Image (cartoon, helix red, strand yellow):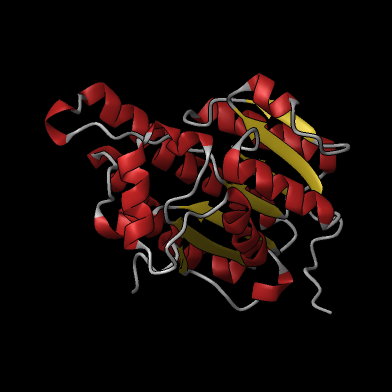
Length: 245
């Protein structure tokens, strides 16, 4: 029997109201973790049925909000062991139509939040010399994406680079840091894509199917678990073979 080592661990999951974040929260609950769940959609977050979870509605693109979430987690549980940062936004705006405002929004929500959460989480984790951080990039960071906008692809490539930097710094402190690059996954975030884009994603994946959020969540939980105790500073591609390194 494989032991995840997650029972009793304090885990902060962002984007927990829907999609991969919600699936991740449910899996961690099944492993016996103590959960702090964050999302910017209060109603969606409230609907997550996880007993005794701390639920925090926040905009993670700003430092005060990130600090509030981390402080609330520490106040409730006394520590932070795991951060799985699933929250993000997806855009498909064509290059000529991308505005400064859209660029800044996507960068703030996807990349700036990853930096702020990693920065704060490492400081909490170093207090007890152990921690795990899983950030979410994207297939688009590898290829530019099928339909993804320029700021989305750039922000997710930035997350991959950030992962390596934080891993270099945090490894000696006992904190493991990894990144997961999902391929096309059926979630509310990707619902803006039309049928043609969905069909193209299936056609390009050698496994010839879509991915469900729970499949991405399983890999995130593995990266955060004792099963990946010597996995550090890597980017894991979970895309059905659509991109092969």
